[in-house]
Image 1 (cartoon, one colour):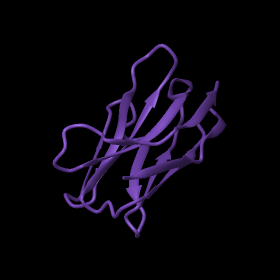
Image 2 (tube, helix red, strand yellow):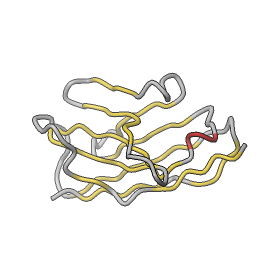
Image 3 (tube, rainbow, N blue to C red):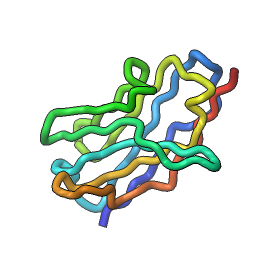
Length: 119
């Protein structure tokens, strides 16, 4: 079993920055893909960014490319989302998620951390 705990959300003005953290425990996630998703009321959860340590690759939603950066800590069980040039439309509840690289769906989810961007 994997537990994910997000932190770092808050209120920021448009154009500002925040860094979200996701601490994973339960097992070593070196072979897992870890990702960030976000959701606003009344909308479906959407993918934001993902990282595969074993494949040395990162991937992003078009809406955040060039503004957000996902990275992993040296212990491989912490994932960060650096968010720059924030916009009001980035306001959402941000979730950390993990899946085994062989899995097609994300099996583990955190509780979420709220990000509010004021105009």
